[in-house]
Image (cartoon, rainbow, N blue to C red; front, side, top):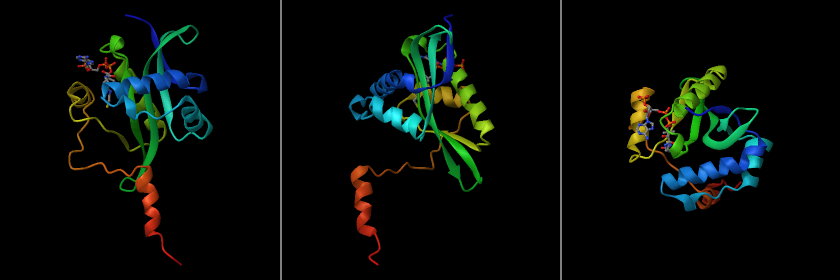
Length: 169
Ligand SMILES: CC(C)(COP(=O)(O)OP(=O)(O)OC[C@H]1O[C@@H](n2cnc3c(N)ncnc32)[C@H](O)[C@@H]1OP(=O)(O)O)[C@@H](O)C(=O)NCCC(=O)NCCS
């Protein structure tokens, strides 16, 4: 078994984070959808922290090696529970390092943070064809699919179009 460690990301990790985001998007068959840049990540994760990241590197904290895993999350709020929630946006472990418990160790860290923040829920989305990951979530974590819910999205143009509904006072 190789050595690795998991820690909160810092601005020095932005290129590693971006590389892992691209790797996950490639696994999800949409590498061209990644528009993030090191500068956008630096600004939106560290300058104005809209989201947070955990990274895993081989080696020890004092002698780190290769960046091998990423979990990127942010907090939301549930009116039904009245409490914050954690939303896991990206989770990725490089292929050579899978099935060694890193995914579960990352979930353990996320669970610790979620409890510290009094989160009532930990939510994430998974593509329907990604059955190895769905099996892991259901079998190992006991997660429940949200099959009654359908995700909805507006992109930049859709958001801009909302102007037409503004009240004319
Ligand atoms: C899903 C993922 C993050 C899990 O990370 P991981 O480090 O491989 O997970 P772990 O080693 O902690 O294993 C978790 C469980 O899944 C199983 N597993 C993980 N990878 C596996 C593989 N390639 N083949 C078979 N089983 C696998 C493990 O045996 C383990 O099962 P157990 O709980 O019964 O012991 C990782 O496989 C991955 O990055 N996959 C590709 C990207 C992806 O799907 N990301 C999630 C998008 S929603």
